[in-house]
Image 1 (spheres, helix red, strand yellow):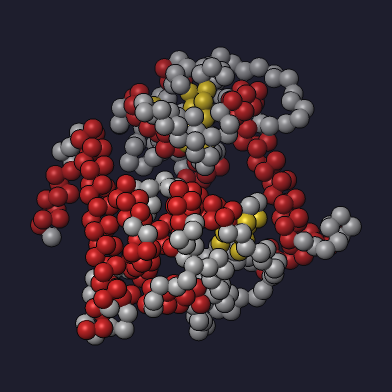
Image 2 (spheres, one colour; image 1 turned 60 degrees about the vertical axis):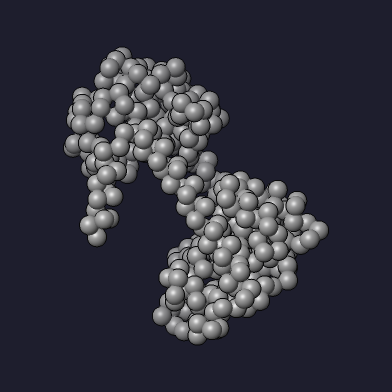
Length: 372
């Protein structure tokens, strides 16, 4: 415990540049350690040393003896088996081009004929991006639309998907296949799912309330002439189109018939509607913060209209002085300009609470575009 506390204390004395450098070095070291573990795990699995240790599978040995989580064990075992068949997997794990998770996702699809192309397609990609590429390379059939009543979360349920992953890790390496794992029976604890099936086709699964179910039925009935089948993709597509249009109108002042501005005081910090429209279009509806390395944030959540020259320092709400920022970068730039604990827009900035004195949670939630 004392060693942990000393390590934590030592980090507080690092400069920003030192911390970034050390973090990168540690991440590289962790990748190397993980790859070394996977390489040894591949040999351990091939020799079936788990049996002599009193376990029925490598998976159970990893969980009970190596103290890996179930997910970590499955990822590393599947990656180890893939690496044993295709050593290039280890090199890609070392470089960071693959993670144990993406290696596991690819493992069941790799063959002697396609492994070079599949690994190249997945190189440097996130889990979500790998899912997209696998859907293009190994398209699956559309799932049948359904609305089902879920049983209580405490009802006994056979978790087919979890069992399937554990079974693959416990038994011999499976033959490559593109068929999806069976979905677990629906329960109230089921998590939302957005999974690519094929190019431009997705499986979307979530839990809805009885009120939402009734609204869906009503929408299907009202769309009976336009969508006689009641197809859920059409119904939700039309509903989301209206929702997005309404949100963009409120947040970005988007409209097909903009009204002439009535003008405002030079001292006002309000961002006029015409400025919001121009800025939102120019910045693509994303955070426009660009790091010195050239990395643009591009976040779409928690956007705010940011004064490049702060309002408290005389900045005006013009298209030249306003950019989109996510909440994190709006706060960051305020701290860079004013410094932590300094005045921001006439009041004291509180970095630890991410808000200004006197602002309530209700006010902040109701005003997603604070004019920072």
